[in-house]
Length: 352
Image (cartoon, rainbow, N blue to C red; front, side, top):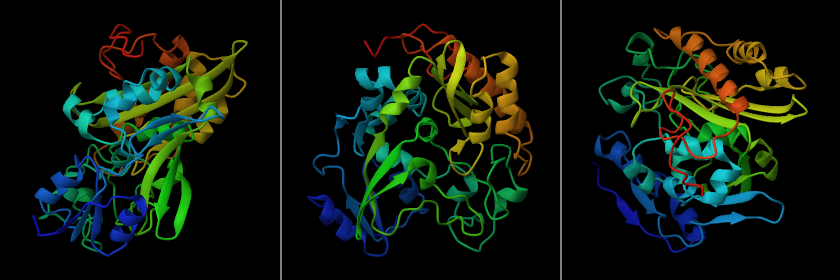
């Protein structure tokens, strides 16, 4: 680990001013940054500790029915917030399917959005990685790549985005509130992460020094509460990142889908919204056939980036199953194994 300056600002403006200096990194829960620093992948010259900034650790329900989640709210605290879990169950289920209980108690929602890929070639300084060292190449292209991207990848990078939390956020039109040297602005979470193209080292739309201060989930997202599920296939049921994952949220009225929201995780360098598949379900009576067709549309542009063609069919199946589970209805209690293919609808009623 390299030597670095440690700064603990007392306000958001002070934090932003400090982080505007080249070589700076924000520190919140530290569950990703500190690991990367220990292995020398992240080498900041200045660490800006924002973990004690006032006002960023609250969940606020706004007058228009939307909810504002401060960026320092812990993953576990948000998932176990009873009102939040009832209103946005797919988000709570995604949060509880990620990492271990200990990590969820430490990790923040702002940091979750910005966590780095788990591609082993990114984490190994001996390997070539265009994200870590622009222009060095991508060893994953000819290496172990069965878990890499099948959508949105380029010849320069085939890594996937690791977050579970981001997948339902993208589906439900969440917005990130940002403060930076040029002032405040908002970025849709669906637009926050960039596809790699020829510059995979530029992972988000954030400018130097910009800080995510909150997430805002619109009131409209609550209409999906009765029919919303997050489903995640992983190589082991606990403590593992998604091989593929899917969120399905349906607004059903009179036996017809009035609106659908669909997104995929583990298949692309960013959380992947399936707009064409959503459109195919509008005004349709929900059925296994309609859901299978939507799943085909969601993966229509997919192509293997290596030894991972199986992920395309796998993602179709996971999305179709998530749709069928959503149609059955959101469980009244959180499944004992949140988001797991092997779960039943029995579990601890953490939202009571």
